[in-house]
Figure 1 (cartoon, helix red, strand yellow):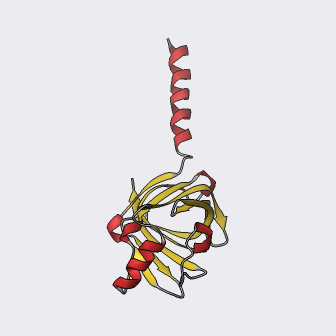
Figure 2 (cartoon, helix red, strand yellow):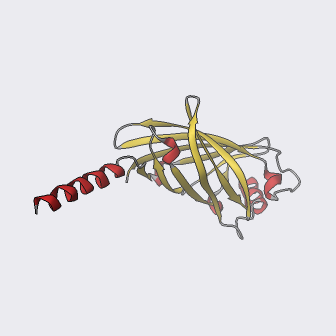
Amino acid sequence: MKKLIYPALIAVVVSLSAFAYFASDWKVKSDAASVKFTSSKADGQFTGLKAEIQFDKAQPEQSKISATIDATSLKTNFFIKTNHAKDAIGADKYATIKFVSTSVSKDGNGYAAKGNLTLKGATKPAVIHFTFEDKGSEGVFKGQFQIHPKEFGIDRAGTPDDVDIELVVPVAKG
């Protein structure tokens, strides 16, 4: 009997310790998340960020990020620009903007999440450079990246060449 118990206990301990190497799950505090955009034509923001984040500062290569935002939540400082921008990104037909990481790695003083960004029905590679402020059971991801609207089929008169995106995403352990 003892011969069966010891191997079983060792197997349980090894199995449980394996879970310690997986990245932590983080739950986004959606009401506090900020997704802002800046361009030569308009500045604004999106609301309602939803994400599944598995992240470990010590082992970023084990991390996974999948995020969506409601394209119809786009707002600028002026309603005409808001309507023009929503029409340009096809918010009525393509209501979700999505990012799914393919890899996460250490990058200088921060991290880089490489993945695929889907906007207006087109999926293109994107890299989000970010930092993570760990506060124990809570934290804050801060990131930025740039998109080129024409690559996503957004090519109307007045469309800027580049749009800078800035993210501030408060999280709690899930």
